[in-house]
Amino acid sequence: MPEAKWRVALLIFNGAWASTVYGSLELFHSANLRQPQDQQFHCDLLSADHKPVQLYGGHSIHGDSIIGEQAYDLIMLAHYWGDFEEVTQQYPNIPAWIAKQHAQGARIAGINSGIFWAAESGILNGGRATAYWRHLREFEQRYPDVQWQANQASVEHQGIYSSNGQNASMDLSLHLLEKFCGASIAAGLARDITFDSRRIYDLNLINIAGFRQHRDLGIHKAQDWLDEYFTESLELQHLAKQIGMSKRTFIRRFQKATGELPSRYLQRLRVEAAKHRLANTEDSIKTIGMDVGYRDISSFSKVFKSLTDVTPREFRRRLRPAAAGVRNISKSD
Image (tube, rainbow, N blue to C red; front, side, top):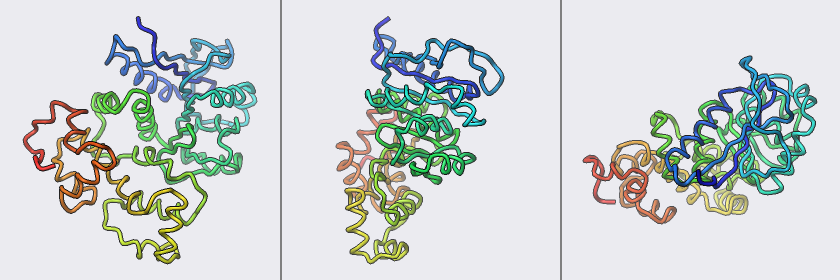
């Protein structure tokens, strides 16, 4: 068996939800099965000590290993629903261990309310995250130095990932697979687990999360609107007026906060949504372009290539070779 490229720790503790542990574990295992001669992941169920862990559903399990000096590339923090004060007192060594791992370069992914471990460690101070909606108010009070994003399904901040629900957690796991293994494996696994291609694509909110790393509340409000209505026609004058700015001030502040012009940010949103449709549906390229906000296929293809270096047709061909000949795909991309 070849040595795996990446080491993944799935942290378990009393009260952890088994579904959020094993769902990620099986997804990484599926990635390994796709390339048996080129193993991607070595996964450990990791506990804080040698005691058995009582999962939320009542089952008792032991970890493969306990937290220590072993360095990991990715640490997954299971969802939790219980007394946060009690569980942090049970495991006083977990927060410092997470902080050390993050300092060494590990990516940290909190599945839904599991993100509280990252907040408890201090690595989220001054940063952004989301969590399961039932716990957001408690987290806002418990961790006031974190900007909690109630309306975002998934958030990334400096290598720390978070999600706010069951669907979002699966999107998050697939996004991490894409980060480590590339888009082809991630898209293939998404199809294998029968993702509902009709569901609104949440990953665009992760893939452009770097443009949210600022504290301009007015621009965050504008981004919230764009994230929801990116398929609609945009008039900067109207959007600027909605948030109480002149068009000139809005453009200046948007570019200062995000590093991008509003029009380019909008293009990124549309292209991310189109990438999902190209990978997971048989819709024609023309239909996809119009559905994400473009009036003609020429404009769509030009913008798509400027952001991805390939045309929509080539993007689909790389991820889905068998779809290249589907009869309803437009030939004029």
